[in-house]
Image (tube, rainbow, N blue to C red; front, side, top):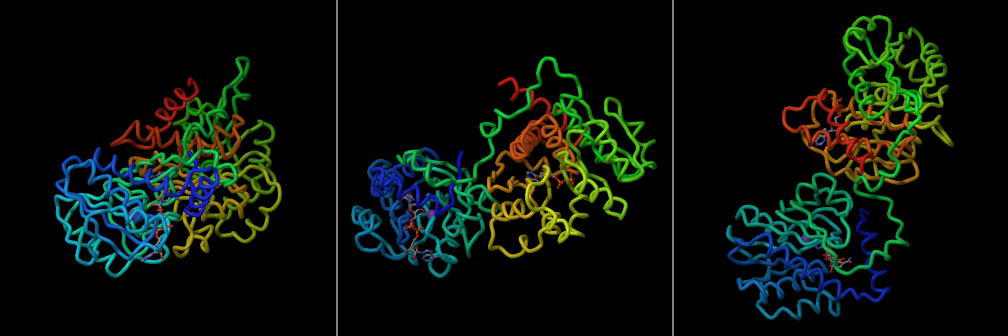
Length: 494
Ligand SMILES: NC(=O)C1=CN([C@@H]2O[C@H](COP(=O)(O)OP(=O)(O)OC[C@H]3O[C@@H](n4cnc5c(N)ncnc54)[C@H](O)[C@@H]3O)[C@@H](O)[C@H]2O)[C@@H](O)CC1
Ligand SMILES: Nc1ncnc2c1ncn2[C@@H]1O[C@H](COP(=O)(O)OP(=O)(O)O)[C@@H](O)[C@H]1O
Ligand SMILES: [K+]
């Protein structure tokens, strides 16, 4: 599903108006959607308080208050912060509320109350403070249940950051399409359960908005999942090479290799420095093993054995020898490359040179930084709170001419052409050592089988997360490749 920034949502609103669906009509539908979710989700509430701001978010609140009074049989109170602008839809909605309106500073929330937070939504323009903030702090202290209209007031719809203060909602009802702030942390957790209500905006309004952001889902990349021909031999099903680090750090490369094999690569080879060969040989079975001493050995193997993608970084090391290998790969190899972990730390040491070289048409590169690695490679993007995670990932992808998988609880995948995806099926069970190594192997397997890089990255992230969910508590990274295989098998048979 498309994700719209608040500015794009305002455009959708204007387009709907032009298409004959008036904003007043949308506000009615929004208030009704809030009403029906409130009744469905909070059957135990003894009374309802609606907090209304001065804009259209408040307008939705007035409509909901009127509907709730008409249908719930519960006492409904309205508390306002500021007055709607004369002749606005919000003023019209406020005019239709027949009950009393209290000033927000006098509002006294109760534990048995459902509070409908309709202070600010997409129009939030500055930090939440003063009476607004104090009222929300009282709600938190009282422990009332909270339904947020569009967004918990104070949350940035663009970035998911909190501007001043925002309540923890039990449920958030937004309209038409989710916004980045609903899916990026901390916003994602502050929203509680997210409901995206249809308020009658026709999907056609999206055509000239050109949103380039989606929630990750198989619909985006299922068509591009590799399906081998009946006659394929193993190398035609993709040959992945994974570079190992020294003897004491071979597990990471093995995890990537195992993941690549389980994700359908027909052949996987671990390339090993001399000292790690014995350690790897005792552990590898279906996976092949090949020794390298110099960067040239790696290049020769890639060319002669028709390697179709490479993983470098997991457990690789960050010394000069390793730097020479990465440089050779970036400068002399056309094969799709997945750089993770230590490889990203090495790139960061030579970031100016690396980024300067990454202009124009370049062979496929996928970078998979976690928060710390991202900050090493793009320190200026990581600093401050002005850019959302989506904007950071997009800018990084453009600069590095690479698909960037910016990992975390709200992983964002971005392509140099501006496409971006927020992953939403992650689970905390993925926060286990080696889980990133598995992800790198999954991406490489899909690349080696010919999947386009952005789609391969999105698919790998989704499958990895789904595998983590399947395994759940107590899972280790060793369990992930097998679980990913089952997830992929199901998708391929769809
Ligand atoms: N775009 C759409 O298609 C629809 C929008 N609707 C609602 O309209 C909302 C957006 O309405 P608006 O653009 O009027 O914006 P809001 O209602 O979010 O807020 C705008 C008003 O709040 C003031 N304000 C902003 N930040 C403040 C702060 N921190 N402290 C004090 N005052 C502040 C502004 O000066 C302005 O008066 C959405 O969130 C949604 O709830 C709905 O009516 C349904 C349709
Ligand atoms: N709290 C979380 N919720 C969801 N996914 C997470 C969480 N923490 C980490 N992950 C995911 O787990 C993986 C961890 O990768 P990484 O940090 O590289 O770990 P390692 O280096 O141990 O392999 C990433 O795919 C990341 O998105
Ligand atoms: K709100």
